Amino acid sequence: MKIGVSTFVTDQGIRPAPLGRALEERGFESLFIAEHSHIPVERRTPYPGGGDLPEVYYRTLDPFVTLAAIAAVTERLLLGTGILLVVQRDPITTANEVASLDLISNGRAVFGVGAGWNREEMENHGTDPSTRGRLVNERLRAIRELWTKEKAEFHGEFVNFDPVFQWPKPVQRPHPPIYVGGAGDAAFRRIAELGDAWLANSGSPEELGPQIKRMREVAGREVPVTMYAMPEDAKAIEGYQRVGVERVLFYLPTMPEAETLARLDAMSQIAARFR
Image (cartoon, rainbow, N blue to C red; front, side):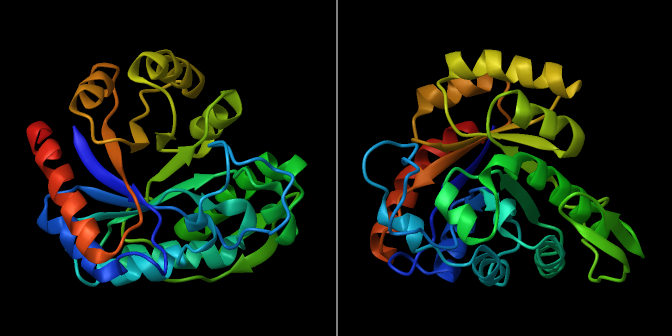
């Protein structure tokens, strides 16, 4: 079982460089960081976790600046977005950012993506929430063209450009792995066409097992599964291992450096049992 960490990196918690060093020193395999560009003060969209929206959602650092800082002080740690809100990002810029991260990290970038949930946040970026699924798919197709073609060209409903040059190309071939977040057949069809792995974000092992089976039926192949943001619970890890999960990501609360290091020490003791 591969064991990594998922977290919100903000201006109030541990800085990126010491976080990255601490994770690698303790043997964690990967880091996946959340993204929100901002949060509108007035929202109709309820927080999926219930109750008030945690402050970390509107204090996140830019994911590529954060992961680049971590890349500079680590050698083995996989560097993932978990998740990147593709519906709020220009695909040409995003393709360049991911490829640049992959280059400076010597091939350690993981591109975790999703359709998002906060309708007002999307609308501030000019995105119609009702078409965000099609928008995600199209932008991912365009990004893959930019990564893999010397002269990339794309003409679609939302994305349109004549042949262009863009470098750097990613170190990983054909491109950094695309981890698709979400659940249900729409997300599973996205995995089938565009994804390399499923980034699952809810469900006990007993609940996730049938979902994995359904996801692989829709995808038509054995797709790897990463379980996002779970507590550091050995019994739960064993359960996810039984149903075919490849990687679990412990959820690390956003805290100052001293508290973060202490929490990582405790997490690493549990992780060590499964290495």
